[in-house]
Every structure is written in structure tokens, then in C-alpha cells.
Image 1 (cartoon, rainbow, N blue to C red):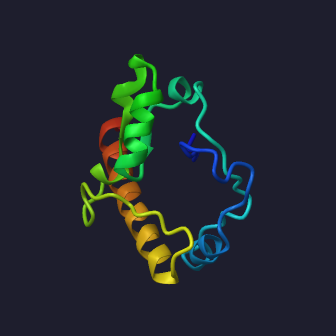
Image 2 (tube, helix red, strand yellow):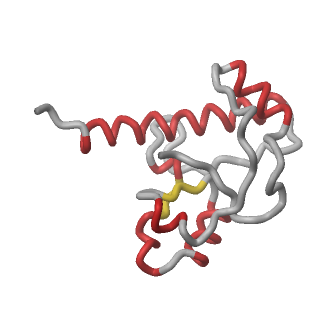
Length: 125
């Protein structure tokens, strides 16, 4: 299971920014049904990994996570190739180019994570 949550309550209950919806649609993603939510304590036990987009959110997550869950928290782009180790800038209120770049960075991190999971969890029978 994959989910998305913020570390603050800025947009809780709201749909994605319209330009985010448009840029995602251009790439074949439908995010129209997504609603912003804030991470809750149970998320740290429910999910195997907690991936942050930037250092600020990474620090917030490490501050609020129970000690038993801190090892689950990483930057998404630790798994990226093209953007390895970088932070994904928040494109909110930005330009199309800002949203395109953020999406390219997210795709890079997700592709690298998927490859790692294929190698480590999908073994031939």
C-alpha cells in the first residue's frame, strides 16, 4: 500500500493544486481523487517506509516518529539515479516547469525504489 501525507496541516482536506493535477494528467497519472492529509501516529507502524521529499520534512518526520520507526524514514531521492540525494522542491504556486521538474524527480526516486524492491523482494520460485 502506498499513501501520501504531509507533515503540516496547511492543506488538509483539500484536493491537489490544479497545476499538479494537470501536470500529472499529462504524464498519465490521475490524482483527482487525492485529498491532502497529515501524517498520523499509526502511519509509522502501518508503513514499511516513510519517504520525505526534502530535508525539512525529513527532520519533522524524525522528530514526531516513535523511536522504533525512525529507521524507516529517508529521502525519496536516496533511491533516485538522475537526482540521487537531492531534495524535491515544493512547486506549490510555481510554474508548469516547477511542477514538471518535481514530477520528474519523484518519478526518478520511485523508479529506483521499484528496482530495488524487485531485486530484494521478488525472487524466482
